[in-house]
Image (cartoon, rainbow, N blue to C red; front, top):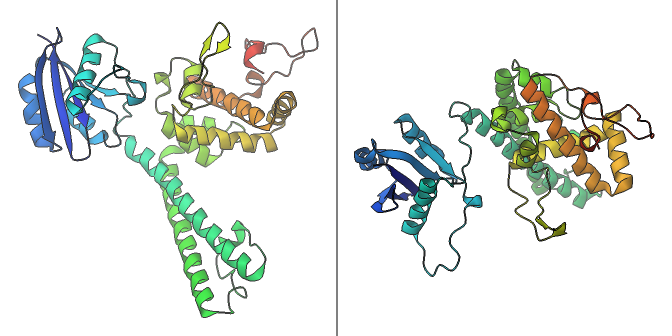
Length: 359
């Protein structure tokens, strides 16, 4: 008899529920987050288990890794795509775990992607870099405001990051101001050094990858954005179509239509926020310095507005990144932007790309 199990995970404990193949409850139990206790509880059911569902909470990694190392077939539930029965008067952890097990039994469980265990630490280190950047930026803004309030001028970020003492002569009027400026500058210098260390460590591991080198050929994509795209994308073959990748990058509109009429919209934040940031940054840089991207951006801006043009270019670059990663090739502008005029004077398809896909 097949069994289906689900674990509703919390910070200090979890609730385990199991159902049989005909939907009958087999086990309901709350456990503390102790690997030994969890494995001992699941062991008697291991041979009959068809799968174990773990809800994708902020701390799912350790439990999923634990179960997979022990040979369990693990499914990561996507909570944003799961809906409970409407009209429920009462629900608790037991109901939640049972519902996840039922979805698995029925074969309709919305699943999330389990990022490879060996690559996860490097991805998390890259995310730590963003946190350090935000901390340094907050310190720089605070120091700029301090100088502006006392001298009426604004020092640029490049000046504040400069080695030495760029603040000399600005905060000398008071020992208190001087100390505030010194502490801020030392913190900025320390964070700059830590950022350099982190970036060098990540770059040493990625610079020889074809995926990384090919991504740097895309307009607007430098080493930091290329590292972000590689690590946040993971294996590109998990995206069956380019549209799914663009949606994962949050570069596809969320619209619900019925008879060509809008009936609302879904969650526009579904997807990866780091990839959304990366392609947004790439679009801003590309529209300034790449002629083909600039021409596409200006055409879209004239047709609509600045934000629509920016998002359209970011969507283009996300699609380009998908093909670069999937085909393991360098970027080619002729495959993204049409440069060949058609019979009616409008751009036509280039190298097999339909007009509707090239703007």
